[in-house]
Length: 314
Ligand code: HMG
Ligand code: MG
Image (cartoon, rainbow, N blue to C red; front, top):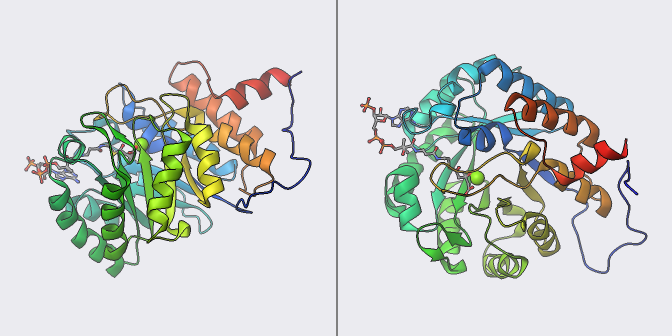
């Protein structure tokens, strides 16, 4: 029998889970950057409006990267200027360098993210420089952001595995995370870019990072290529992480990680959190409406398991 509302746990689990999590909706950026055709700006705005209506409070809406590298995000300047001003919702964007930050400042962005990688090959393919060079580029981005009162988040890609170099050691991730935090990033989002990780690897990684970094400074960014993202979300929750990136309708991928599929679907994460009794502030039915809207726009089947099941259950 399909359930129109999620099961709740009969009693508290014996391990500690956070009472509340922060969801970072990355569909309009991570999701749409990977589409072969750029989505028109009106449809992007309609998607974002629906995500806000569903209760999402942090939405990564675009990126100020080189438009020749990622043409799907070329309209971010115009998009941010068209977004409503809302004190309770933060619209964020990727800024790989000072040029990107200057565009973001002009467009009125209040939070940005720099994005590093745990391997040299991914760093070169994604941002055209070595890891050390990327740190030197990010430093002035973080400094200038702070001068403008803009919060900066740091991403690390390939925290478990790299499409070019294979497995990645937790120590390599720790080194970069510490640098980004000491530079002034308020949080590090750990990207399993190719979705290859399994819960044991996620826990091992978090244990290593946990020796020097509090869990409150970490977020997970889990792609679902191997179907492990919900299991990995649960493992990270048990380890004490309370911030998760996710993507409506499970959209997403990285143009420089061939074959990687979308982020964990926001719908599936919300269903999981509902079942665990963890607060998140999102209305699942309205989220499903947003997911169906964008799936229709992109002319594809609506895929998140929780969303499909709830639709079938009425
Ligand atoms: P570059 O070509 O090395 O840059 O690109 P450059 O400094 O040599 O400049 C070359 C030209 O690009 C110049 O123009 C610059 O003005 C221009 P020209 O003089 O030739 O006319 N340029 C820019 N234009 C607009 N905005 C800018 C900008 N910067 C330079 N910001 C760069 C270096 C980093 C810009 C490039 O490699 C790039 O855009 N990479 C972005 C790749 C990307 O967006 N990847 C996907 C996002 S990351 C991701 O998905 C992973 C994540 O989800 C986590 C996970 O899943 O792991 C976050
Ligand atoms: Mg990603």
